[in-house]
Amino acid sequence: MSTLFYSVYGLTFCSEIELTDLGEPLPGPVQADVRIRIAPLAAPPADVPLLDHGLWRSGDTCGVAVPDVARYEVRAGSEIVVDPVAGADPAAVRLFLLGSMMGALMMQRDHLVLHGNAVRIGDACAVVVGRSGAGKSTLAAEFARRGLDVLSDDVVPVDRTGMALTGYPRIKLWDDALERLGVDKDSLERIHTSHEKFQLPVRRSRSEPVRLRWIYVLERHEGDALTLAPVHGALTFSLLHEHTYRNELVHGPGPMAQHLEQCARLVSAARVTRVCRPVATMTAEDTAEAILQDIARDSQESA
Image 1 (cartoon, rainbow, N blue to C red):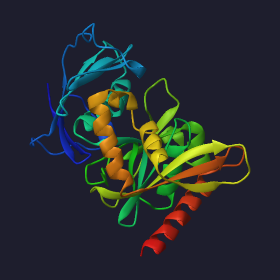
Image 2: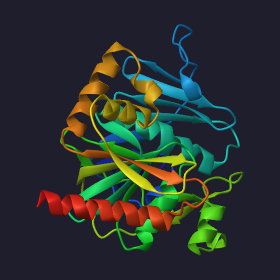
Image 3: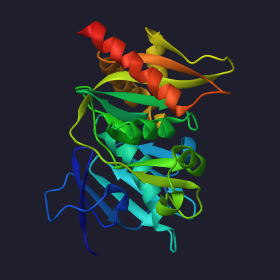
Image 4: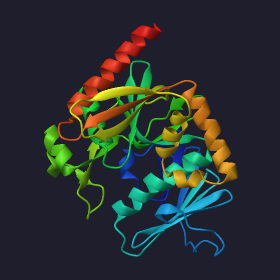
């Protein structure tokens, strides 16, 4: 079986699965940090409880079984094993590999993994988090339209020094979001064949890690105005936990203690702000403008 080499999140991967989402493979062979291989996998031990989304964790291994797609296991932050179902859509196999399993891998490597999008602003970056359907990816596409570098979509690992790592060179968008942005969906790849979400490629001027300075939490309200409100104290921790990618994996005494330490390091260096958007009139353009103005004010005050 041929092996391909890729670079993402500052790591080199050798993979037995073609990962078209990551762009062109590296000229190999090269020394790899993580191996992705195909092998048979059994169900987890009977005494291992299932977490939300079918995930499970036991020691330094976690995994998931996705019906009609594959079983996956992530081991010690250095290996991902995939057991695809016969005839499974390769795009669906990649979707869970590069989503939940990549998030688990980066957690095992001692990163705080946020569920959001990272955008470079000058020599720092902002991460926009929010619940599914909050408009994170549409907002990221608006930032890209304005010429800003979108560093990561959906899975944003932050290392121990507060640096956000650069992820996949694409944004996942629903067809109606593409229509609002004036992008022809017929020229784009679906995330998998039965899904009305598409891969929008993005270009970046640089790909090195960037200091995370601002975190914006997208929320909705029934009022008329778009408002931004800074968050302080214990609420910052609850918001970071709520918007940690697959946060069910950090539950338990050991993982939770590590997670709280990661959150404490981050809030000591990054400002957390709630963005309350009016349901009836909110647009990506207005939200992007409000966030960029807030960043400009903060940068001036900090100068």
